[in-house]
Image 1 (tube, rainbow, N blue to C red):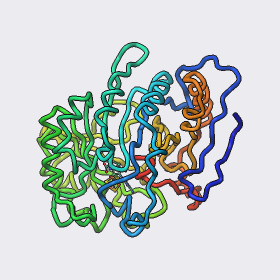
Image 2 (cartoon, rainbow, N blue to C red):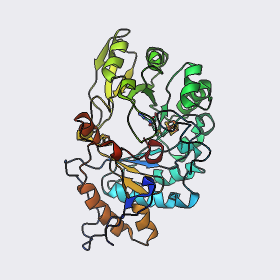
Image 3 (spheres, rainbow, N blue to C red):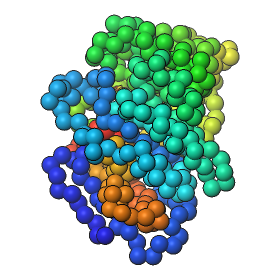
Image 4 (cartoon, protein in one colour):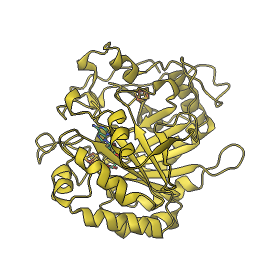
Length: 369
Ligand code: SAM
Ligand code: SF4
Ligand code: SF4
């Protein structure tokens, strides 16, 4: 099969079908990309739909009633996702994160989790299986997710103040329901729970200290994320980014912090501990301090495109291989060269102002965070 560019107007659908090498050996094996980065994490988007309209991700004006979400038939089935995940595990993936859109909107997600929880590394170990959610459905679903084999959850929470929270999700969703979801996740043993707070200067930066105060000592790890220029619809402006250094300064003024070592290579968050034993926080400085050097994450979109970077403008169409009757060995052999050719490092280049704006196309809700 040759390299094909599918000429559809919407860039979401633009993809290369990875060619199958003639020589299928070795069909699996650990990979390193052109910058020497291994493949370790696979983020799987299970839906492009969401019940929130966070302005930094799916602004209401763009994702309105007329927006065409993917039809059911283009979504990867649970069997297709599991099949691909198995191939990726053979190539070194040890962590699977389900995301979206809002992953808990995908019908029967527990079934997928149970299927993924069965997968084993070549030396027989279970995978690190986790999920990122806006928390809106967690109170109802946490127990079933844990029973299905989910290990942990990351919950996105941008404010404690109900007015600000409702404004940020832009669907008038109350913060109390997300807090109940977090409690339910804790009770179901889906920990250690991480909380993601995207900080937008002038919108929720005055929630940084109240959020830290609320979650100090709870065992939950609050992470402050710099607002990123993903996609083409959030109207991103640098002056709305609050650098992590400023976040740390605000926190240090209240509680002294000490730096912690990374727990795993390729970790996105820089970890800090409250010096008084109040637990841990993290900062994710995707804009001001790029961490492409250790980026070991691949992303599988809802319709089965493999993206090598959050800012990639085109994916590799693995669904075409799945639905084209290709064997696991063939798909595995096709993925190897794709990762080996990877040289993406958008955030580093953005810092050096080397990226043309037109390249920034794929939306976060489509590719997953
Ligand atoms: N709907 C789920 C949620 O919100 O957790 C999962 C998908 S969401 C795209 C994944 C993560 O991306 C969330 O933590 C969200 O806050 C983050 N995110 C979305 N747009 C962002 C942006 N422009 N900058 C930084 N983080 C962003
Ligand atoms: Fe939905 Fe998550 Fe995007 Fe917010 S960040 S709009 S919750 S997908
Ligand atoms: Fe990884 Fe791309 Fe983000 Fe760099 S910009 S850390 S390569 S996803």
